[in-house]
Image 1: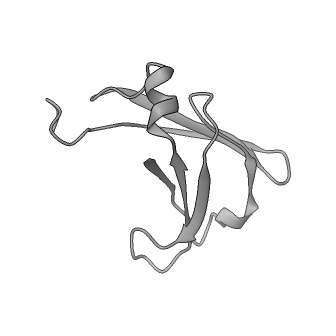
Image 2: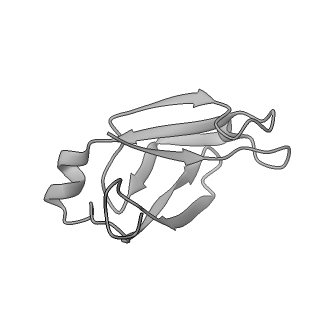
Image 3: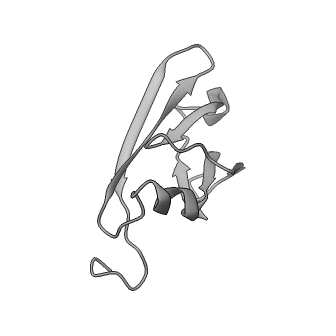
Length: 92
């Protein structure tokens, strides 16, 4: 599984995310959980994506930039991207 965190803050409540709309480059998460991954006191949401689906889509490559997108419950769209670094890959 590849974990992808969507960070919450005092200005962004992750409970407003329509979890069924979330995609990582078109791939739906296998599961999700609320936790405070960056220890700032705000609740974050961590989506877990199956690596087999990402590999099949040609997305699971060291240094590849991936975009997480979705909707909030009020219909507003969001997206964010980052570069993945695989343990043992040339970018690590």
